[in-house]
Amino acid sequence: MTVRVTLISPASTAALRSARFEDASDLDARGLAAARAAAGALPATGRVLVSPSPRCRQTAQALGLGAPGEAPAGWAMGAWRGRTLDEVAAEQPDAVAGWLADPAAAPPGGESLAGLRDRVAGWLDTLADGGGRVLAVVEPELVRAAVVHALGGPATAFWRLDVPPLTATDLSGRAGRWNVRLGAGLGPDRGAGPDPV
Image (cartoon, rainbow, N blue to C red; front, side, top):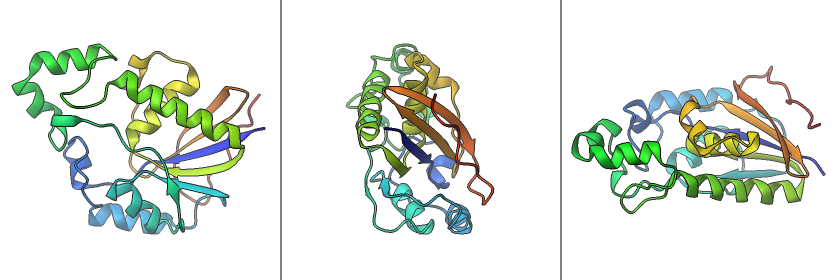
């Protein structure tokens, strides 16, 4: 059975614009306007899932996605939450260097990259069991982890992926095999993506 998963990254926030680790901020005016403008441009689906952060919930609402179920939460950054990488690196250079180099390293009180990747992989595998179409508004780091998992890449490939606000990444798969279509805009001309082989 094939599952088609469209992962939508949330619209912009002040935290995203200033490159801060997620701090539960709301969409800014530009992000809200962009999400509203994209309403109706997504494929019809039986399942809609949304990460619990305000920016994901507000994006889903602005897109007119109805009553969603819950998608996984974003990356738990522990003591670094709400701060920029530059701020943390100035105070804890060794911790930041270790976190960037070692997928098993985690921010104080947070989740490692390996833990995030495993959590997202488990979620995707659960979605694949159900088949059909799924539309999920999720944090950019979940999109990145999903792509790394789908491609069978090393955890460090995560650092080489960019996910712009309010873009779609399509995954399709069956029997543990995934195809990926990256960064489609949320316009009326978006294609349905590749069929799995």
